[in-house]
Length: 502
Image (cartoon, rainbow, N blue to C red; front, side, top):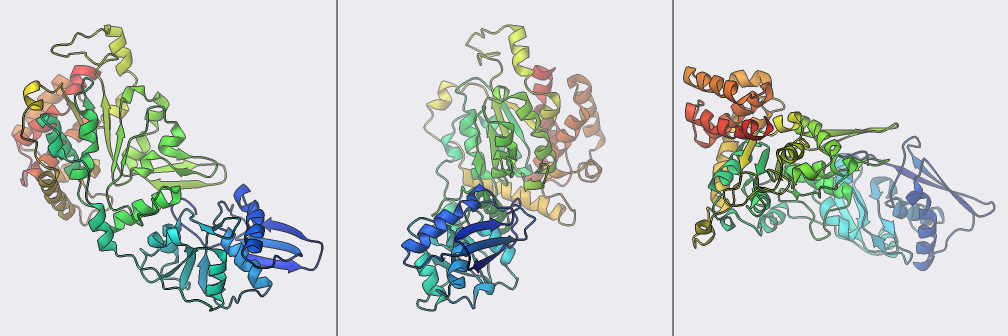
């Protein structure tokens, strides 16, 4: 694997009638070098003879570092073929991968789906891999996927002693089973303003910051945002599943991630944990939230350096991790939802609870979040404490399905608008040049926006955010042009620029 893309490694095995030894070449990492012990024990315990000769295993191309335990099965098959214990007339047309247990059983590996995607349409006719990985690999059409449980079964298949039917994954069935969310917006009582803001965020792909006292429902609202986002398209689901497959986080019973992910890292997360990293870079939380929601609770509690590295993925929809020997790019196109208290104690501006924080403490607390990061958050809303009459009401809120229908319609309008524009799919992606074309205001709207900028001290980036959000509000309203009432609603979602940050 390189990022979420795969390349073929040819495993070559050479036996020499000399003193017994075992050498692996081709820049193997520790896990690959240790495969000699696993392969040796697995071959013997599966009932085959392990050659007492000088063994050389070459992993080509030799100039690229190899990692992981997926090479166990192809090395074992190569040794069995070299000692004529299995026929290997099909080995050049089949890809093998799998980790071997000491008793010869096969364990699942990471990256089965990206590998299958890389093989599609090529000269390879099939894959032999552990049974738990077969479902995800079978998502790729035109490739036979043969699941095996152990080394003996793989050898019997190659010798023609048994027949294994290729696995077939029903994509429609996977989607039907997975779309049932366990949470719903109807669970949320009150907070109509916050629910409206999240609907706008879902419709236009906008980032959201929620500020309110403890217990006001910020986390509850954030967890329900994926339920009103449009259902994943097949290509989106495959791309997201590839990231989870590479990370080894795809559940064995779930061949494809068919719902939008929701990631909520703790505020103690490191830079590498959030963005991705390591000697061989792995996807971080921003990539695991691709096509879904990244929720950062208690935003000021995150280290400032961690928050600052969010700028690139928020701006570009991808993250590039550079090391001395490689540079990998992972997709990171997500909706950011952040939540925070207005002060360290949480009750600054509360109508009934007294705030115990000094002005200096409040300012220091808010200063953890930089202006450039705030500018990249389109919608800023206050989430007040829920009143008793809302909590005691028997009727629930509007269900997620009804809100999602409006969001899907707004996304359809945007898809038609940007169908011939590269790099734009939702209103949040509109470029500075596109603002002039897609977010035009009439004279009344221009006067309204000028007054707002003069009184609220809005930055140039904040100006563009207001226009993008107003375009989304107009789409939800089914309006072709942005009207003053759409612009006014978008401006109120920047009120916290004046009330807190300034």
